[in-house]
Length: 292
Image 1 (spheres, one colour):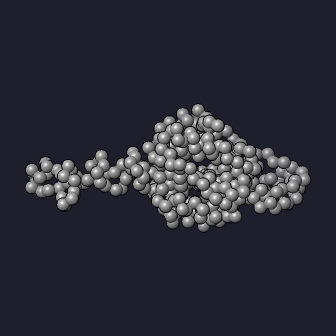
Image 2 (spheres, rainbow, N blue to C red):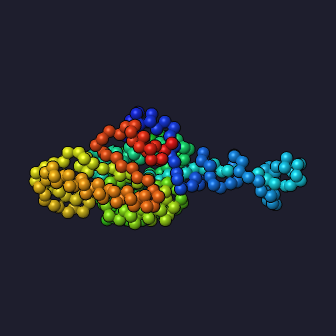
Image 3 (cartoon, one colour):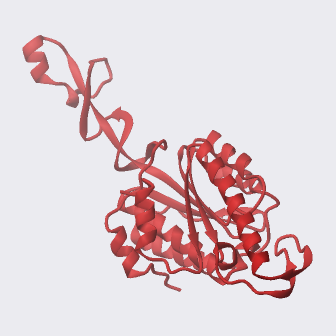
């Protein structure tokens, strides 16, 4: 299966790159200026010569003018580590479009990562586990990874967001940017966010809502509601007022999640699965300072 973003979205992305506010560039050699200095490309500062320093970096002009032996130090150009974690629990399969939207959002962040010369990997949280794909830094790798994600069928559950976080931490062993794509309609989100932040992850929380939660038309009459993750069954009479109350509750919950994201200096993006993915999504990312 060859998964591709709409051409309109690709045009809007252009050469847009991810903007990291806290996460350092510290992975391999890339295009971002690291805080580290060493034998890089762009001059950073002088230091006094010490035995063992690379003689090629001696500045003969400084020695000729001042009689001082110094070596040049340079900024190291490195890559930002970007991890994209997708919630593939059963709640992401209730609306047929939710998982497709999650995969498309992952692809957008993947494209922006590669545009910046950075590297990305995709993790899938499913059946109480988190499985990570290969580290990706090339277009062909990205296409393979996105196609792999598209073939996944969400099911199973996480008892709380804290469980998802704990399962992911082993692979998040170095500072970086973490993009978490989920409906975020589960307990434990504040603790999970704090856990990721303590482990030096700059969090971008992306909420994918189905049509029923995002304002689309819901079924009315006698409904038998089944929690797809716990199996709990509830009988309800639903009318327009019921759906308004439900969406108000979802909006209130989402506002609490958003506040928790901001509390850990993260960023928040929300998207509705039943609406077309178009250039406005990229515009929203740019407005929030996520891409250039």
